[in-house]
Image (cartoon, rainbow, N blue to C red):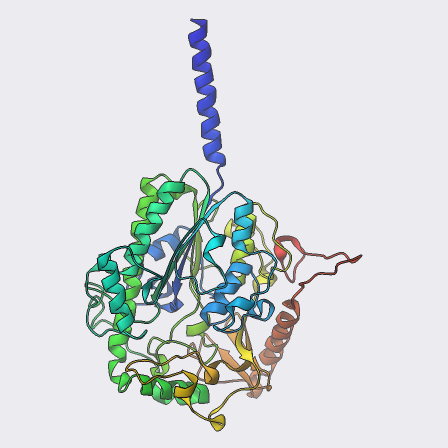
Length: 517
């Protein structure tokens, strides 16, 4: 009888310990990224079509931002900032051609591995990161899976994708949803999570859509046909944006003859791709719920930059720092994250993701990280509002601006090809020089190395058509934003390498740049 009681007590103690260990398990981190997704095309932002209901529901269950910005509206600089918490001027990766030049001390995967996390990438990389850094690596790009897909159906679909020449298919994609990379990625992500679910894990689920090639299978291809709200800008308004936009339109017209007649179709497909991604995110979340992992998982949803999606009679991105290219969706949900149906008022950056994850997993924020932790505000705790009263973005790889006066050999540079439907919006004409921007409240300033300025009231002029920089009535706010831009430019000077001898290196709590608290 005593032995039985002892065994029962031991079993109870073991059960209690197991429950404690389960409760104490570090939260899983799932970073869901889309590529080239405009922030304002979500129902929660007031868009009249329900493009991503699952993502919106996740946002309402956590904290979401409508003043979140990429560090640079190009994939490789932005993704390098995401991984390192550093701005492009510090990483040395200022365009899509310099991924191997990334300069930093530690990145997000270094920290998570040190904390005992299993790590995986499923999807698009497009950064300096390589497969040997993670426990699991399955890379997809705009042509499907990198390497053999593993199935004849997958290989066939990837061949179709490559046939789109990285642009578009104006017919429903073949093979149904099971052939789509977004579906196959979720299959792989679910299988990996099922294998490692007893350990804390970090999964970077990185969709290569709704970036071009614009393509979708049914029902997504036709889901929003005839339902799109009208565009508010076109070729006429594009003239107000300057030479780079006209150059981009010229390249697009060469790559896609008569493209303006098909803008409506391109927009429809783009929105269908958003919904296609959303349904696969739901499938992934449903699997986490079935495995009992949902409640202990932090979800981060982000996109690396936006897309014109027809505004200024353009598709893709490239020419500047417009809101539709630089502002991105960002939301956090999961254990400890406060829920709110309304957007948070803070101005936040891509660079803030890594330091926030550091504090979530109780790891020191590495020296050289320039982003700030959002963890206090995500928990609903007090934070210095002046720290997040503005946000800073960079554009350009340097040198002088390359203009039409310097020549327009788009074919020789590789911006267009002789193939039908190809133009590369990231090129010498759109990416040269240096331009910086700051948003503060309803106002935004853009300034370049030649001293050219743009000033916009985003509440009254969301598509940035009325430049108020030289207007006398705006002189006070111009001076205020120029000072804010200068403050950001100085504060984000690279601290690496830190002094090797004698000097103490001071950092504020939560890696704040401007506030000590």
